[in-house]
Structure formats: structure tokens, C-alpha cells
Image 1: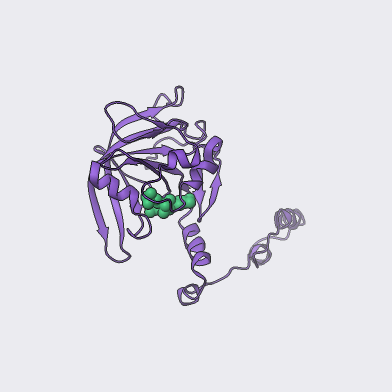
Image 2: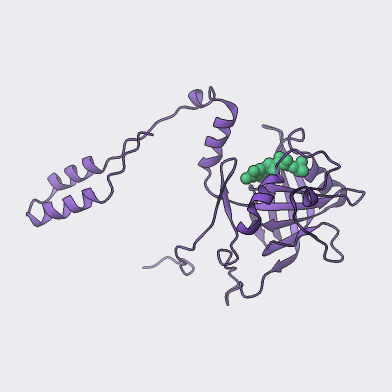
Amino acid sequence: MTIKNFGKAPHALFKKLVSNHITGDLIKLFYHSILSIRMEHLLIDTIKTWERFYRANFINCLSGFKSANLIGTVNRERQPNLAVFSSVVHLGSDPALIGFINRPLAAAPHTINNIEATGVYTINHINPSFVEKAHQTSAKYPAEVNEFEAVGLTAQFIYPIIAPFVAESNIKYALKLVEIVSIKHNNTFLVIGEITDVIVAEGLIANDGFINIDEATSMACLGLDAYYTTTKATRYGYARVTK
Ligand SMILES: Cc1cc2nc3c(=O)[nH]c(=O)nc-3n(C[C@H](O)[C@H](O)[C@H](O)COP(=O)(O)O)c2cc1C
């Protein structure tokens, strides 16, 4: 990496210059030049030449931290399936719609096939106590393998929802399939579901409906295999235009 970290030095120097009564553009110019961070400029033609997993990791990081989830489903014979998904996105609150991106069928067939077959699935936040097991569900297990059993997580069935929840998860919800949108450009799918049931550990919901998912130890993820614990930095009120 060529990014230089100057730490606190420029700030201290800036203060010293100000205290020495050097003012105006000269200070600004000097301050900016010592603060300047050396940046790498990468063109897509270069990126395309990179090794597949290196490139996938790199591009995946650019859209930032994502939520770390396990999606639970069953097939027509009620055989459970569980896999990690990070591309979960809020689509709207009323109706309560959630989308996620499913990779091409050849790469990730079971979750999407089960959702199409049954119309029901669960999304479960990943917590540090079982993150390693959760990650393992991303391995390409054959269709007949129940990932709950393979990795050692507990399938929790809450009547009448036929899709399994992850018992260990502190925040989870069930959805009914609304629509699967095929993205032709890269053979992926946007799977859209409407929330039907929400299961949240007690004490996490604030007075205004906000869920303290950091207190629930819900994790974020990045790239192909990195997981993060989270800490709230701040909360602001609803932003309004001020005069
Ligand atoms: C951190 C992480 C995030 C992932 N996110 C997604 C995702 O959003 N969409 C997807 O299709 N696959 C994702 N995967 C890959 C799937 O977990 C993997 O392809 C899995 O085998 C799919 O299983 P299935 O065929 O049982 O659905 C992710 C894997 C990891 C490790």
C-alpha cells in the first residue's frame, strides 16, 4: 500500500504555525500539501486482469460493510437449507419489503430454488457466538445436506412458518416471496420478500421503533470472508431543512 498516514503531526504543525502568526493562503497551501495522502488510481481494464478471487474481494469491499445474515429455507420435502447472504437490502417499510441478491444458479442454487418452491424464508442476523459456523454454511454442500446439522446450528420452527429460523440468532424475521427479478447483465437475481413475522430478543427496541442491533451483537461483513462487530457512533434526529 502506498497510502501514507501522517497521524496527528500535520495538525500539531498547523497549530504551531498559527501561533507563530503565519496566516492566510500560505498556511492553507502548506497544510494541504503535508496532509495530502498518496492515492492509487486503478482503471477497470487493470482490475479485469486480476486473479478472480482477488478481484472479487476488492470489488466487494467497495460497496462497504454489509449486514451478515443466514437465510433459512426448506425444499418441497421439508429438507432444511441454510446459507450466508450479505446483499440484504431494505426496499420499503410499507409494505415491509426486503431484497437480496442471489448469485447465478450454478453458483448458489439451493436457497433460491427453495424460495421459489415454498414461497417462504427466514433471514437471521449473525452474532459472534456462532459466526464461524455461519461462515461455514457458504461452502457448496450438496442439496441433500442439511447445513444446520453440518455446521452445528439449531433449526427453530415457529408454527405455522415452514422455513427454519436460526435458534442462536438474536434478531430474525420471516418473509413470503413477492417477486424474483432476473438481472440479465450478470445472471443474478433480486429476490424480493414481504416480512410476515419478526423475532427480536427482548429489550432491543427503542421508544421510537429503532432496533439497537449493535446491542444484539448483529455483525457486518466485508469482502469474501471478513466479519465485524459493530458499535454505534452516534444517532441524529430526523434531518430537516433549517433557515
Ligand atoms: C460473507 C458472505 C456473504 C455472501 N453473500 C452472498 C449473497 O449476498 N448472495 C449470494 O448469492 N451468495 C452469497 N454468499 C455465498 C453463498 O453463501 C454460497 O454461494 C452458498 O453456498 C449458497 O448456498 P445455497 O446454494 O444453499 O443457496 C456469501 C458468502 C459469504 C461468505
